[in-house]
Image (cartoon, rainbow, N blue to C red; front, side, top):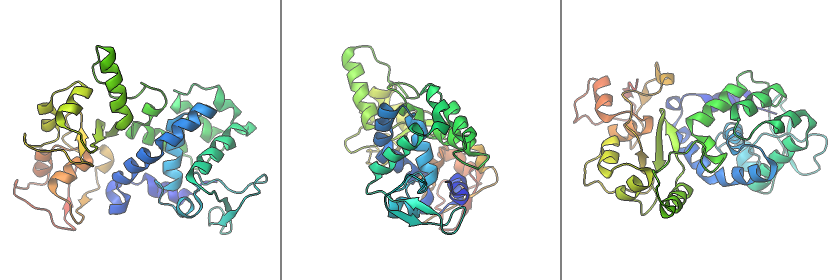
Length: 306
């Protein structure tokens, strides 16, 4: 069912991918499909975090041929009981047949039924929806994938992107400090409109149109000046839709997976955008590379990020 090469590409450190394969695509996919995953969880009992993690890997965050041409986000093959259309795609064999769906919703629905109605996976539904590690290991144990690192990979992406926030109303979220019913209702709206990700172990969101520092600070229980400092920004900076906003202080260096992987500067990048991409303090990015604050990166430059 699973394409090892697709998994390998998806699991490569983000710094080794092209501009199209950056974290932004993964964040966009989560934003676009988390609602589907939650809907499936409510109807079939499969943790939304597990559904999203599988879809991210199987579809390469929606970039795979199967996702683009067949709306197939989970790499499910035809099988004995499939009577619908199919597409030929090389996997275990060069002529493997995969299911074709009319919509992405159909793919998510079929994935849930595939697990729920298959006796092989019945043991999973005795687990709590909050036990994402148990589900990940159970999927591997039940034979969902042949990749020996499958469970580890699912757990990694769930924790990296804070996907457990979709498994319940509260689990895994970064919370505002609430005191009144009105505060609770406002917080609920805020977290409906903003997915809270983790990058380099730090909570972050993507700014929406109309967001202000005062609004985000109020809903996350901090101060506007602190958010500006966390994000290496001057006091007069106006938020723009799509801006990365860290809710905690960034780290001095990137995640350990980038230990021997420099960042290759891409068109349109600045030292600031690179620091935000990896969750690194801007001053430390300059310091690690022995650069002056007036340095402007050129396409192809290799920068140390850890």
